[in-house]
Length: 300
Image: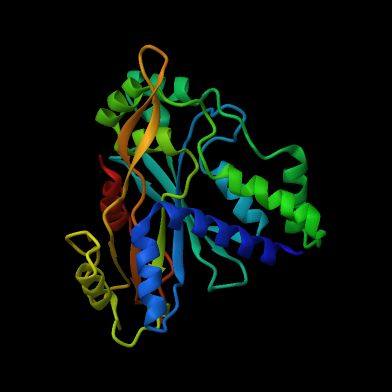
């Protein structure tokens, strides 16, 4: 099995896991299927901390090393100065239909000292579930080697497991205090490397009754799915976006007495993206101001 098949299997498993947690995405998938259309994801987003994170690599590298080994290359950089975030998007080198990958990192050392301490104390216990063998196999795939099915099955299990939280259960007080500084940080402390969101690629949806993002959003509203009130990007622009509201989950937190409790917190939304033209070609990047507003969809 080569890198292309490994990537396809990994993305399918991540979509399945995300779909089970975000019913709005599952409902969209069912509605599109009933119309004879195609669910095609434009991009997948992840969040990270740019600081020492146990034995995991810091920031974007922790996640990008997986996708780069499976055929992706780093493209544009995005700076969100006010939110203390830096991000890059990645595109597959040979398959333009493969979803883009958008990975952001919180520049922890730019936060107030007390916020830095909360994050660094919380993530210092993180382990890297990717073993040296896993990393060697990824390197082999990146070099074009083909691996046997049993080996690949074990590797995919490790990769899927990676996309979760790999530090100790955070303290309730840490989450509540951190949320005052950065809702992005509070979210990431709870969810770790989990998928932040998938995104429907409206251009490839192929539903006659929903020719654009507006028609799609209206159909989702009629089906009872709570949607973002405003669109990001003007009609006819090179990128127009919307999203569902984020689903809430009961997340584990550690109480002051050491017991495990639950806190209601946002998990993920399902985004919709319609791409226009830039210099005569379909625009494949992202727009900073629009992304800034979409970050807020997980605000709790």
